[in-house]
Image 1 (cartoon, helix red, strand yellow):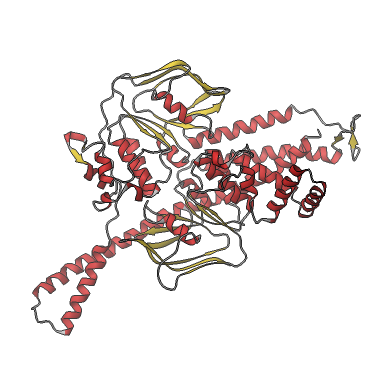
Image 2 (tube, helix red, strand yellow):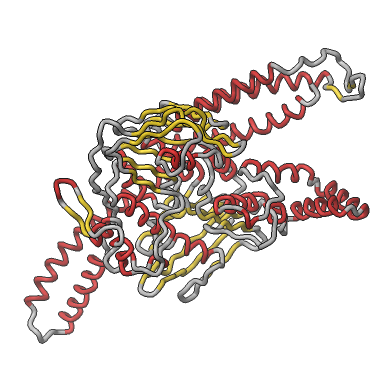
Length: 627
């Protein structure tokens, strides 16, 4: 069943052609991700499909299946002025959402008739569970103060609110632009499970490679203005892309040999040409355009020289920092070693960025001290980026920092040469900063951090808005970087590849040092959570063994009947078995020899297992209230 048909879409800005005459269709339950280099037009294509921007060309067709609900998450969503979080969430055409909104308004108005009508509507639509679901989704995305005005929210909170609103409205077709940006790791894993449901049709842009691997069943690559559709997940895409490029290289090599022969023939021909020779000459120029029109893939090149590092690097000596009742760090003591690579993990709002500012002495601790070695030069890549002059060309903005950049063996690069290595062509260097895409701005920010020649890199969410090609090059650079690296990132693939150990922010100022990758930590955390649940259940008072069908205590409170007590005990055993199965499945992903088919099979099995656990835990909690 076709959900979306696109035909003959084109889009360009001035001389820059983003895509030309592209067409494809999406069927029900397809989960498609767009993959492309920054600035290639991914977000523009999403806006064109969503109807937010006009397509160009003749016989353009953008058609959704009649009657389906479509939810759209922009890269930079916005809400109405004056709205609270609850107002924003309940502004919807969804029948259930409207019922919940009417009920909320009736409660506030003290209008008995309106409240009675709202209660009847809630009962008719069976919306009571839906009201609880709304609160659960908001809670999962760390949105708790429903009375807070939207205007007071940060950019990340607005993005999470927009995502929550879409999920609450339950559309059949989701269009999501970078949905994992501004989510912490647990939120990403929850969203991954939600989007894996078979009833959801999904079109998205994301750089999260684990997300691509576990959620998508098709990947569409936008390359050189053309679309290439690859069936399967991220592993399948990499394999098929490699085969396609090998074939293209063979064809290109043949064309070059043929072109060389044709060039010799053209040069030998006299000026007076026959019709046949003119035709062959035209074919020569067409072949030349086809051969040299296919530019070799540009790739980021990072070859920055790091400054010498002395024996004393960085020490945090029992530092403590708090803001009122929020304790960020408490008695943290650590001495960094050479070439150390540390990942920082914790929920949003726990104080990870504040911790980085403590280490760089941007802010002072309440107690303890930070000692920085005399040879240490920080390169600090912040979430907010560098404030640049919007009305300056890119080249001028870079020259404001330095004209030349030192490389290994005494060599130097000019600012213009460095920009070329960061995939900004000579022509693009004259483009104003204000015209850059989000990913291009991040790449420029990274360049400006590295060109200061640091030997201690601190990267706060470096992967947001960067394309996969750039991420691969950055990963290779960081693995060979001779200095120290601290990374805060919600990109699990990136963390697993780079870091040696993790600082886990557990709340109330406690920072745990975990020796291993993020995936290893998640396996251990799942096991710890499982043991904690078992311990919690064992602390509940034992149910009575009476066989009465419905029983009450002396004060009239309901108790479990005999069948419910049996169900309660059975659920405990079933949940424990399912948790063991889940941990075993998660462990399988650490096997690097897994085939793409196995990865897809285990991902589906993991999603189904987690869904069953969630249902059984909800029932267990219902029964536990009366134990």
